[in-house]
Image (cartoon, rainbow, N blue to C red; front, side, top):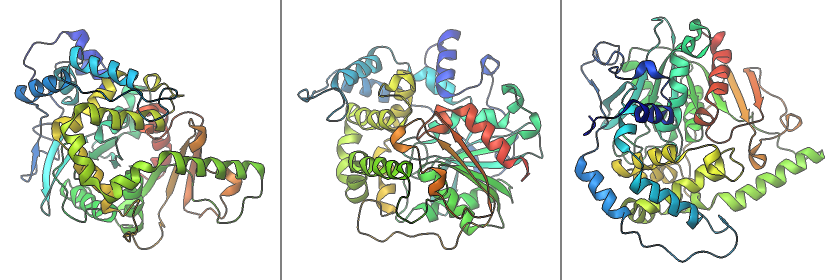
Length: 422
């Protein structure tokens, strides 16, 4: 619980940053914290986010004693995170940001933990008022954590409160991948395929024999693994992006432009994969010890990967950025989160474990093309779309984090896709 009484305005501001629906949730206890499907299981425990006062004091001491590197040459952000922006963000973190308000807002969601085959799993379980609603499993990516899913969660669980049909509600389950945020440290070998196995066990523990699945970034890989490996459990899968492009030389100017942009992105924006996929522990020491370091590492990705036109605060407020950074800082999971790249063999010569078999169940895609360099292949470059791809939407806004960048568009698209699969 907060150490000091919060005023209503502060709490509402925090709730908006965390994706909480509106004033009706103020002062309310987490829904079904004592009586829902999850809480009824003896091996599932309600969970409350609670950072100690000592941890907050330690953070503020560190923020007051920053050692800044020399300013880089060139224009802002040319060499990485811009120092002027970061100095302003850190000053806000030190002097104005209220973790207790955001902690309270996060706790208005229904959080639980359980242990599956030796791994501690944290998850949000937001149930629809309709008992027969379709369960929907939502898997985050990096560096988003479950934070990135929260603005979409209530839109999906309670569509009537957001101007949509109540019949389209879902029982939403949004777990934290092992090593991320409030889940425990991952066991060796916890990769995409292993995460899918854990998720199937989690959904079974919750009593969900059949469910839909959505995921972005690493979560898209987990979702496709679910679709390939568990056709008896999963009704359909939905991911951002487009179906795989044709493996042929480009035939049009639009296709050549797409390949040129994709190559430039690969050169300019994937260096982090090499270090996270080969030497994550070396990186972990600095990021776990320095709040400024982890803020710089994450903020650069929020800016580069979102539809912000180079100004990250047009998509994410300082409060939103610092809530994500604070989750990593207070849980000390930035180092364990980047191990996921190592586990999946990304950026290295180690073999990757690829789920066997094609996805044969219904699939849906949603392209968010607000970042020109990441707009995905044109339709002419996608040939022989499988018959089970029954849904393909294209939106001209949004980037790598659609669940938080464009929660209304994503929720609408998920409702449309799953409407015929309920």
